[in-house]
Length: 96
Image: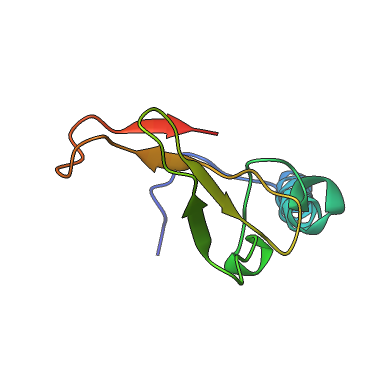
């Protein structure tokens, strides 16, 4: 039975391409587990790495032109608050 494939690899080409592919897979796996990528800002790879908010979100000091919103997390993190001045949430604004 003959193959109609126009690409034929000799042993050396096969071994070279296999080595490059295996090296790429190993390097990707190693880099994804390294501390540099695991702690990079704005890159959250799993739910375990997300900051937890054990006490929830609280608000206080509501005035006509301002409000205080606070929370406490289990590690340093940025809090992003989305708010709207209408109940329909049509004009949502975001504060970091």
